[in-house]
Length: 325
View: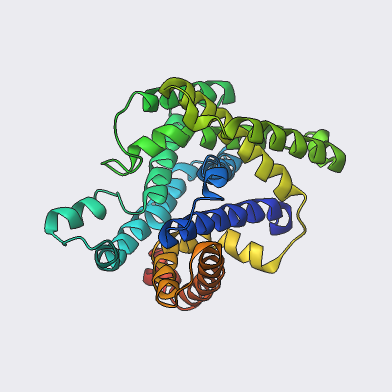
């Protein structure tokens, strides 16, 4: 097993994506003009799923003992499914009050058990369960896995449902499973000498940035199916841009913390920027200044809250810790 230093780029990449989410939500909740959101949104979540797939297949392709499947299923249950349900319940009332919606039993069940509130972890849990099933059936060839991911993406393009559709945001799982698999493919080729060459990585970074900038601005201007295809390629090149940038980054204690604790930052990425936007609005700040303040203060507050939760209540993110304490 590689040590943490070898996974610095993973933590940096997840931290960068999380900062992108906070920028996105800061612009949304302040009602400021969308300046950075159109640039971030095509690849931000795809890159998250890419990293998750890399880590999943890194373990799956290296571990062959009989306990792997049971351990993996247990981790999905206790580190993804149950924390998602728990935080969906905890966030239901604040979320309802913020949006000015009336609470009801049916709405509560849809937002919690139905998995429509925290769509990312819901979709990720479905992806990992599906990937585990494919492995159990003996499907380990990366080309076959890519074909499955592409078929699911094509199926998604034909589904008329929102990204957080019942049950458990399955539409997002269909849309992004391809990137989850691409993460596994990258693990397969990562050991090649070209990826250890700094100049090659810089060249790849520049090429991916140019390709991304050439694609993303045309996404909303074309017919639906071509729009899906443009999004797919833009998301790919955007993800690769963040990947190569992250691999060039030096180690940072804060970025490592955000990357390793990204699930808590995700659970807070709605309520914290929303609350900060309300405060900033009361103070009379508008426009880009309000976005900057909400973004910075939200990240600081989310860092503090995450540290406190992981320090004193780690069982919130792995319920087995409550049993062991």
